[in-house]
Amino acid sequence: MSAGGVWTDVVGQPAVVAELSQAVAHPASMTHAWLFTGPPGSGRSVAARAFAAALQCPDGGDGTCHACRTALAGTHADVRVVAPEGLSIGVNETRELVRLAGRAPSQGRFQVVIVEDADRMTEQATNTVLKMLEEPPPRTVFLLCAPSLHPDDVPVTIRSRCRVVALRTPPVEAVAEVLVRRDGIDPALASWSAAAAGGHVGRARHLARDEEARMSRKAVLDVPLSLVSLAACLNAADDLVSAAKVESDRTTAVTDGAETEAVKASLGIGARGPGVAAASRGAGQLKELEKKQKSRATRLGRDSLDRALVDLASLYRDALVIHTVRGDLTRVPQLAHPDRAADATELAKKIGAEGALRRIDAVLAARTALERNVKPQVAIEALCVALRLPA
Image 1 (cartoon, helix red, strand yellow):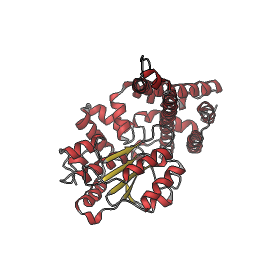
Image 2 (tube, one colour; image 1 turned 90 degrees about the horizontal axis):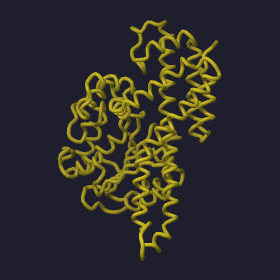
Image 3 (tube, one colour; image 1 turned 60 degrees about the horizontal axis):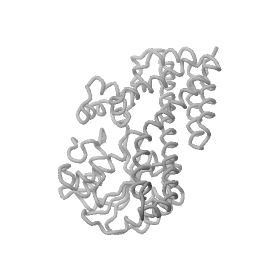
């Protein structure tokens, strides 16, 4: 099925587009709560936004009308999007969301609430949303996005009240095509980026458009063959943690400055006359903003490190596959890092299948440690020592 209109950027998901289009076209197929699952980069939130636009569109998602354009852009009065700026989505945020979701739609056909990264809701926030799902207003639709159906991601109480839409990792060719069509990327660079990102649409776009992102990926994938001594392991850990902090600082610098200046202006800080009294009462608001910004920076740093760890695990996976087929790359259907096949082959010779499996386990353990708020420097140093090459 060829998807057009609001579905244009839902890449490589024909079955999902067909299911959602059916629900839009036939109200009997509609339900008040949907759960979009799928691996990182599969386009969960893109599909949810497209569905929201189609639900508001008088023509079911033509992609050109005011309702479609505003819903996709995040400015439609009856489409609300919640995404965690910090490490989690808190109960105060969800209470306000539930309050707004209880209103009748002002312009569109539905009041649509999209919760990106619903797996990051705190327990109290989850309970608040659950109450709304149990007693939904007549014209409100909840669209929740989460990586999987695992109870750690989505409690069974939430999942049982939702219709599940399962997305898959889109084919590399489909990702490359959208980079060329939508972003004007050179076809050769688009193909490389799509393959290097493993079908992750957002990351493929980032790699294609940002040379620093390509250099960061190269630095991460250079690590496994460099770990020949304890000193090399500690240096590599320093580099990985520092690179994540630099990326986080670069991303937050502009946003934080603009937010702080906007709050100061609204409080009249620096003003004379009547504004001075209001400004003196604004210290609490500035402190709260600083807390939010710090949480956001922490999340961005953790996300950056997590991407590095996924890249490392994928390279060891390639080494395991190559060892299994005895180095015959013609028998490998798809490497995670096809441009680093030589490195994966060298690793396969040095560590073998058992060594590759042990190192994949070590990377997964480091990801778990970071999720549990172990200090990044400690977690990554321990990991690099575990990844050290045999003498």
